[in-house]
Length: 424
Ligand SMILES: Nc1ncnc2c1ncn2[C@@H]1O[C@H](COP(=O)(O)OP(=O)(O)O)[C@@H](O)[C@H]1O
Ligand SMILES: [Mg+2]
Image 1: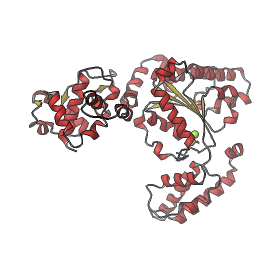
Image 2 (image 1 turned 120 degrees about the vertical axis):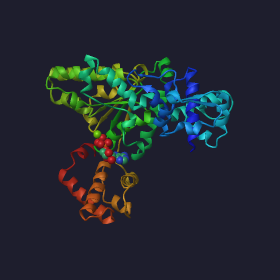
Image 3 (image 1 turned 60 degrees about the vertical axis):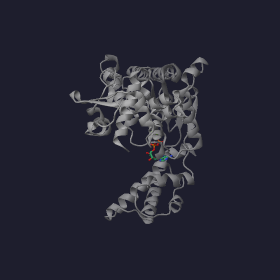
Image 4 (image 1 turned 30 degrees about the horizontal axis):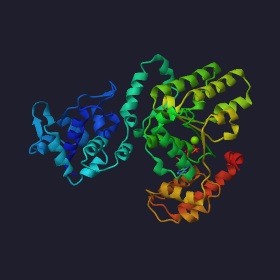
């Protein structure tokens, strides 16, 4: 790609942005991150383009060299300012480039501008959907945390959760093998997020609470975390076991704090892992403070809404049979995570081994994995890799995998897999 085109795209985009009426969500992320001030929580306004910006965004060191001969660009030595003198000429030049369409396809500001002027014909909504919104930037979460840490009430809450942006996540949905049902539920949520105003008008407030259930190691935690990238929203992750305090009165307060925090971070995903933890306590212990904590949890869930508060709730549990019916009822979708069938197992192994060297027949391995979960398969791969390394090899052989699979099988028998007793 030509460097001059990078600079012209930046100049056009910022010039159009400066005319007003455009949401920061529509700026391509690399441009937005450069001009968004995480201390103030807003975009620079108006945006001026300098040689330093061009270096920051594209790694182009000597911008003036590229723009010198372009008639519609002015370079001002003082402050190394780069200005677009004529938007129309710039537009024409840009649209005549070979890769202009590819660029517009990833730039909602330009897409909208060109389509409105009938200069090109593309689906602006699709371009917009592909562009990560401001709420998915690391800088956005940083700004929120910065603000919240000034609020005494929120400091205690910040200790109870992990907050991260989609950008912080190292894996994505592509690393997971999902069932049709799981994918369908997630797609429904995408549509609900996009149309939350409309749903609000129809008073359909009870949308946006998902409960992931299934045996241990079937990808619930991993998928819940991956939704931060999928939905482009920051994630507030809490383990219920972390907010249970030895002073039970404090537990109720912690629950309140966490939900309050999620509302302040909105739009976001609130992920509660080990959701059964509290319900379980209630069945074994009738202590009134425990009951109070459960009631606080149920009430908090009632009072938080994707439509009104912009908080999508995901709960996950390995032991749904321990949840009482009142907790179940509060989720509008229950997503089941089964133990993988043979085809899924093969695909999971493929993913786990995609960066490994070696030849192997995965079908043979799958034959040894009766009742295995995704995380058991991961253990097989780990064992096989370590087995190779022990012999100073970095390739993996069929034998490594078979040996490891047998080993995991033995271990599972010894453990008598408590999880499966519940599930089978
Ligand atoms: N469906 C799946 N596709 C790909 N990998 C999986 C799948 N299920 C589990 N795994 C692997 O097992 C690991 C542990 O899964 P995890 O999300 O912790 O399960 P759970 O929360 O259901 O107990 C994941 O990091 C992943 O490597
Ligand atoms: Mg888990």
